[in-house]
Image (cartoon, rainbow, N blue to C red; front, side, top):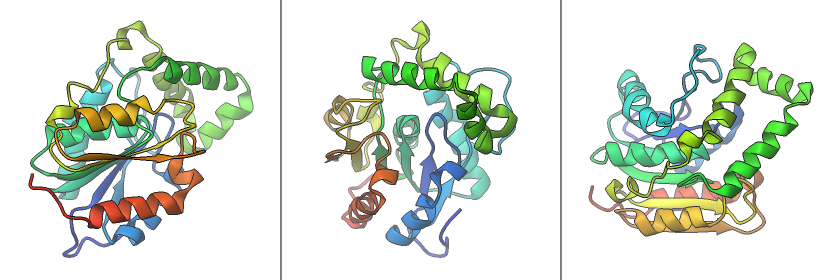
Length: 244
């Protein structure tokens, strides 16, 4: 947790990507807390980082399950009532149902390189990344952050997204239930998702939504151009809030 709760506005809760964890956010949470003057909370999803290991792979409904089960448990444990939901990649996917399911508590939603459905480009990127993990050094690097769970983390990503059971997954039916302001940040060179995803977020969101498309940026806007992302998020959150 970064920042100070005090009488500050609602905290930002960060949801990490498919191979991510708290440590892989690196210095971004602290920088985000400083830029926005808000408490920033990042947590390891079950099976990732320093959390307990899991035996089962995520179900095809794992995005919705995070919002329905894990996210509210984290908020309850930390005493978080109102919040800003923010996530990267699949964490951004998860932030969308978090904002929709807990609409009365969500002040704003920020997505970084989020996907709205399993695009061919997304799956091609996953296949290419999976092939790179045939190099043992790649898995060793993952183990630096996930320990003995590294193989599970990789399988949870690859096998879930490439499963035929995931073909019909989409957030277009969830987005209309998002009533808060939305900021969708996306790189136009994102190897895991085309710019159709932020367009769909803007088109289907039930509240006011805008896109920030970052030229020359790939799948990690907050690493590739952290200062710009911080500026965008800080300006967005300091603007007028629409009634929830």
